[in-house]
Each structure stands twice: as C-alpha cells, then as structure tokens.
Length: 426
Image (cartoon, rainbow, N blue to C red; front, side, top):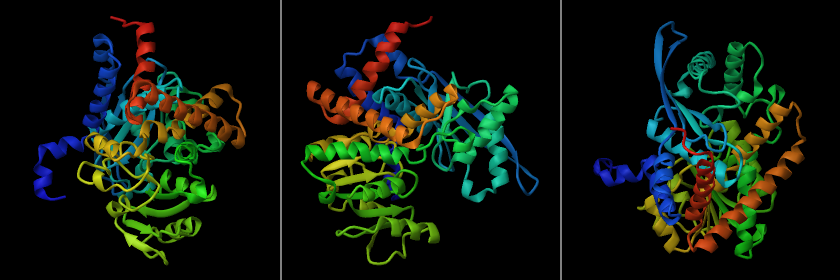
C-alpha cells in the first residue's frame, strides 16, 4: 500500500470493517422499514469491555497487553463469538466481528447473540507459558461477563483448543466446579464436540454444493480457488478435494500456488505442514495472494482475513460464485461491483456459519452431558446450512435484492422480532 493510499480517508473508511458492516446494516434496515426505535437499539453493541492484562514474561519483566470483549446483542440468547490474538487487533474490528456474529447466528437460526474478543499481541513471539499466563489473566478479567448463559467464547485467529482449555479451567477455578459450557472449541476430551475443528470448512462445502446447482455444475466440473490454508481454507480445500471438486489455487500468508488442471491438495497440505510454506511446492505456478483472487475459476473462496476484495480489485474478480469463508473478506464498496458483474455471492454470515453452528451443538451437548457421534454432528450441520442457504436465496428472490442484502435482512428481521417481543427494559 502506498503512502497516498494510506492517507486517503475514503480508503481508510472502506477498509474499516465496522464501517462496512454498518453500511450493509443500514441498507438492510432501510429496505425492511425497520422501526426507528429498534434501529437505535440494534445498531450499537450492548456492552464493550476494555482490559489491561499484566503478564510476567519469561525474562521476568512485566508486559501489559490490551484486550477487548464486545457483546453486541442478547435478544436471542447468550453472546457467542471467538477470541483472536494479533498485533493489529482494534476495537473497531472487534465491534464489527461481534455484530457479524449476531447476524450470523440469526441467519442459521441458532439461539445466540453476537460477541467477539481480542488481545493486542504477537503470539508468534511469545512462549507457551507466556500465552497461558496472558490467557488466564484475560479470562479472569472477563469472569463477571462470560458464562454459559451470558457469553460463550470460542477460538478465532491465533487461538485454538488449548486456549479454550485454559479459559475453561480459569473460569472453573473461580466457580469452584467444572464449567465446560463456558467456551466451545475445546478438546473433545474436555467436552468439545466431534466435528468442531472441521465445521467451518465443512459448512462452506455444504453451501457451495447448493450454489453450484444453480449453475448446473457438478463437483468435477467446478474449479475452486481457495485463499488461505488455515482452519477454514486448509480444511475447506481438503473437503472440497475429497468431494471431487477441482481445487486450482491455494495460498498461505506468503503467497499462493495455482494449477488450472487442479492441485493435489493432500500433498500440498502435507508440504505446508512440513515446511510451513507452500512456496517450494512443485508442479504449480506461484502467485501472490492478490493474484490468486483474480484467477479464472467457478468458485472463489477467500478464507484468510478481512478486506481482500475491495473497490480497486473487485472488477478483476473472475469467478461465478464467491463463497466467503473468512469474516468480512469483501468491503461494502466492492459489493455493487460484484453484483454488476453477475457474481453470485454466498456472504460470510452464511458461508462461514458452520463453526458457530457446531459451537451451538457443543454448548447443547455440554449442558445435556450427552455427546453425539461425528456423523450425527455432520448430518445436523448439513441440515442447518442447506436450510439457511435456501432461506437466504428465497428471501433474495422475494425482495428482489442480492444475496448479501437478503442475508442481512433475514438476520435483522429475526433479531428485530425477538427484540420487539421482549420489549425494551427502560
């Protein structure tokens, strides 16, 4: 990014995830003729918490980290959302992600509101002990604000099953008994759900399966480009490959690989695991992450991070279906360009909702004390994702809007109904 771009306030606004979320919310609310009182309540978070986290580092010195937790909405149930660790975490990003969680839960019709958390840190530069001490202190600061009936965290960027186990244990030590329903995404042995690790990628597969039917395609005929190779992109690419799709592109943080005849995804992922990079993988063309977004394909699945498709490159996107595995990969300014190009968008609040759906299943299983087989989890996930896809498509057709707007309208409509029926306690 050039200095001129960085100094351009229009670009800064476009890449602010909260601004993108609010622009879409406002459009959907206007089309719904949302009651002004409900609009005033729903457009802002219920609660924002900022904490400072002192941590004794391995060197013996104390370092203070900044952490956030935003609880966006409780109308449909406890807040639900991940915790991310990254040096560039901002309160606007966490606000946007918390709101997206509200709409995501409503789109797939699970009884949660939206929440999100983050700590400003560089986990790659921290030891396991430092990460544990930081996580436990962060959890202790949140103790009065989280819980099975209040707010249920989960893993997100740079957090995992181990992180959730530390939070669960910290919360349980304060409660003086084991509370495994306080988080989801835990190890199976501590009450995690089978199928949770693959859930977001598997949910992405299920909605792509439905979308290609609209274009009369079958998996072997369908070329898929996947940006990202982590928990969503890597697992999603593997599941798509196993389902018979031709995955023609895949990337990591350093860049991407491309082969129009298809990539041996198991071999590529094995290479990535062994070398921590796709850069030396043989028999492919090496491309940048931005170039990968513009390759010719039937399905483009951005599964990395926010703001990958912007007004400046949206016109060069060369796919028929955009399946947003990441949160907020497309800016609001790019939406109209994609719509004018005739690209069918499976928006993030639907496409990557497999993770929160199985998190809901995990929460239910924890509260029941009875756990399901993985094939039962996957079957129930398929039922939810397919039904939600059809709900969004039907809503788009009935209201003559694009699928992203339809998803927001459907979600806002559901949250507004619950808010209206509960009333405003004032």
